[in-house]
Image (cartoon, rainbow, N blue to C red):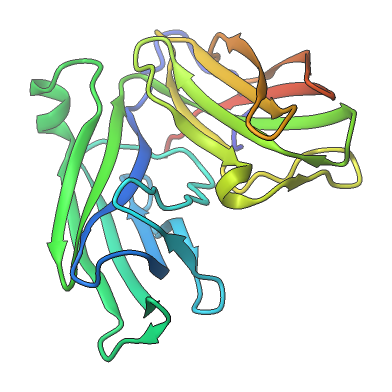
Length: 265
């Protein structure tokens, strides 16, 4: 959350960005289920340094039950800047298959280079794109969206009243691209625990939003075995500062806060 208090001159040109919506292993030579670990990183136009969006070691594998399961993303920790290309480096391995150790643990390895200039010029303005990597023993789909004139929204949710653990789902979207960007889902990631100050410790909390759109946050709290109580809040993007709003959702009273900033050199 850099430059949150900086004042920018009128006419300051905002950069474009990317949101990674989901990453799925849509085909596997080993079949399913899979116990997956490894890394997926991105390198953008800001500094070409690696920004992790998936990172698990061998002792903390994720279970992939079918081709419909998404990897649990834990990033990015900051918004992406896209002036030319953005690169995604995949290095995934499989621990075991159906309870048996495999001889070759490599699952997916390769480089995805997305030509941002061409996509921004010729692709529809609001669309979810897919980049596919065929390598090793799998086919991987990376689903993403480009954001024109983007700002970075960092989401913080504070538990004001209710249980210390949050069971449910937290999803971000925008008014123009209403696809779900899952920030947390207790069914796949477990319950969220509130810290000493009551803030829920989400692994993923940064979303890119165009200043021409509206950020939509939906909090769905579990109120039964298969029931959810959902509340939706809209935030209008800004170049700096923050916005917050209190909600009551199921047994929880929460404060939703979005801190706005921009990504630039």
